[in-house]
Length: 320
Image (cartoon, rainbow, N blue to C red; front, side, top):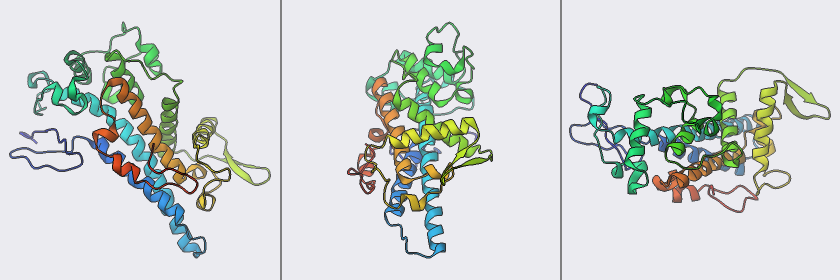
């Protein structure tokens, strides 16, 4: 509304009351990562406490709740990944003088050193200004930036001006690194590959197109016919196999809670935990290169993350 002002709320997740100001939650990425944490915790709890002697109705309720928690953990983990990089650019916008913004943007201007992502002067004022200008479409991403095709190969030499609307989240991370003269996170990097797998799996689920699956001789798992879905299934399977704590026969009660058909066959508590781990590991890698706080440190989540229970056979709790 006219006259509204937006200010930074550093007490993350809290709703602050400021005289003559309307305050929103600045760090929406916190809402996603904290939701993912809760959903991972709950999915593990359901699996560990699964009652195999319950009647069919009770078992179906357990399975439905379990699947909902795992799906929610995947969706909110990826949502955190996408929101987090947007906030890095929006923090840069917060440093812009009021007269350099759009007419209806009345956020309170703050010095670079006081904005969440850039505290302690990790990034130069000039770089922060360029990031803000690009986000506000005041400066084009020009084709003469010869490193961009290497850093962001998905763009194929065409750089849409509207970064917020048209650039993928991974492209935004690469651009932030490029502008700060930091090493890109290359496509062969395992953390990046794992995140891309989670994004593709999330997209397949949200934009799901019904298709046939082939039964495997001997009663094995059903295999999707569509090549693209089959490739995503294979990559998700590779991610699940990367769990070094996983017993040879899987975790207790896992098989009872899963279905044989993809994607339900992948939606386990172990996968939910891996999804959150993978996203946070990428966030940590990016933050180290940018010399800014990662999400766990920024939001003070160390204790809460350590309280995520371990799976049976998983000797460590938490997400590290």
